[in-house]
Length: 110
Image (tube, rainbow, N blue to C red; front, side, top):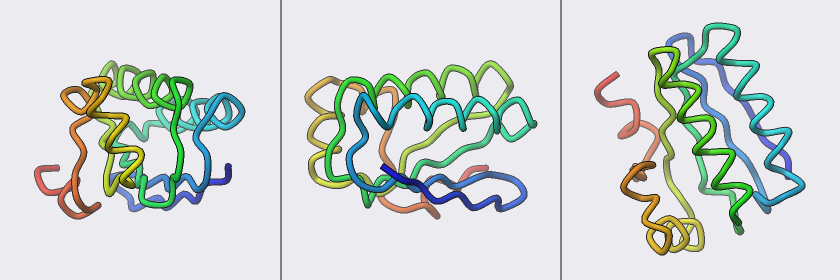
């Protein structure tokens, strides 16, 4: 998996692409940790290009959410693909990582 990153000043948008699995999750979570350490605790993860997510990917998102909130920020997920949305609902993680339809919607109340 690769991912794009866009620092928008008040927040950072991360856009992973491909499979978000055991191989991809650790470097992604490491980048989230680096951003939070650098004072960027408002993160949006744009999931529209993720075609597969497993428990490792979900763990990276939950770990990032916890780390961001501990620093007074948040991690929000936007535009999940059908497979990602199905996994979020199946695991009930859509209650914790409430998926937003678009990036703009995720940023609405920031």
